[in-house]
Image (cartoon, rainbow, N blue to C red; front, side, top):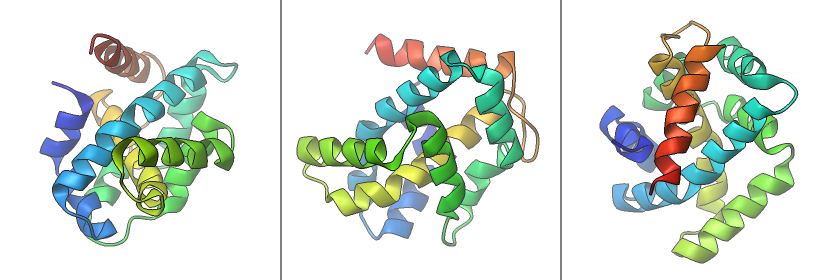
Length: 160
């Protein structure tokens, strides 16, 4: 099962659609187009000098699996945590803007919607990975657990 399907089943895609005022199909298309950049960024971050422990520590410090719960909560998602994740995996806002622009040109989805979706989606992915790594709602996702999950996701995207 793909990460996009897992996020769909968790309710994250539906939650994002409602929060952004778009239909679920548009949210699915947008998430599917944004996910490769987020996962690749997480892979680069985990391979960098901070290692997977650095990314895992960041995710754990933000609430681990609770990040996904924040997206599913029904209210406005606190995008600051998602922006922190994006800052770690992309390095700066220009990369996030570039990703949104490229996905917009590929999908026809409004770039402004994609810019709003990116931090929410990053939180959902990080939270989902933390839960899969055994981080639970408040635990950490550092070490081999997160690395193993990230490796399987990156491997799955490479086989597409």
